[in-house]
Image (cartoon, rainbow, N blue to C red):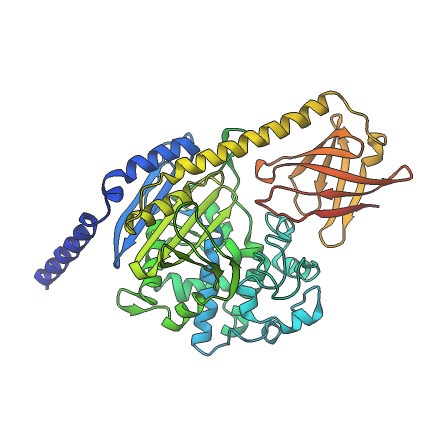
Length: 507
């Protein structure tokens, strides 16, 4: 028996070595240099990378450190929060239940969640499970996300508030990335399984059979986990550690933490029609359902190579790239951005994890590796993205300097500063208060305790609003006044969090 074992082991090692030897020169000769240079350029403390080709892991490596200023190295088992790469797990879970005849993806949501509500009762009645998983309910991308993410709202409170948000568009008329829809989809799983929560179903039906031993379904679990990457951002050119996102009230949309080692098993199964180690873990029909185009994003496009369309399946972006089908997703959550990409016809899978939310390297490396395997020219995408990023930073700095120069002149406000202070309310979010603190007006929110916004006069009824956390950005908030009294204020934050404004009315 031992002789057979050693022969099999030698065969596997030979196959892996063959895959590495036949890898493009970028993988064999340049990957380490490329990653390490990019980490310096982007101020990324730690990176983890995996490349899969023809059913074998060609590259699996960790780079840098788990936390800036420490010596704890990133390895292939280091946990990163994967953000919206969680969505493919949620969609796959529901597609598996569809394959097992426990539900149909064409079922109306209210069949399973009778209390499901949306702003338009007719839409709530007609919406089916697919609508939840392909972002076609009519919401603008990220609409409502500030209200939900990192808030003290429970999942049930998020569901209730989601039902009150007025979509910007009509039902199924336009694609709009809707995190709360995936949260809602996850709530169907206990109904169809006799009580298994979203997290339990993933652990029992996906994580365990795929030998994803370190993968965590809930964001709260990373706090006590071992071998984990810290979350970071870059604020005005300075790298900073930030708290982990608290997003279990939206868990099915983005709460999973995993390592590149564990995620390699997920990608291997995806590229092998649901099989892992010769076992059918995910039904082939479920893989097919998630990769079936459901929503149209646009014509697509790429800065160098041919890319003719951009679609969305169930938890996956679907594109044409240089004549091949591309299946993938990205994930962004407090302190992390990640990428999972596959070119099924080439049996190619690419995983890139980073522990800062302030980089485009995670996308640059994905394209670099794809191009290398597709025989396309080397482009140095990281350097290209750095150029775009620096131009954007310069534009932002110039914009901010003009605002700060205006503030320095101590411009006159339309009303006395005390008139802007008081209690405000948004019909869906709830309460916000503005009060003087140490000579400045400060806004604080009912459901985001500890987070605040400093307001500095720009003249008239406009104030520069600086959020206490860099992730949320710096914006101009205009107040509306009538007959010497403040009526309302338009609250905005960084696009990364939400594009749509909130109108808070003064009591």
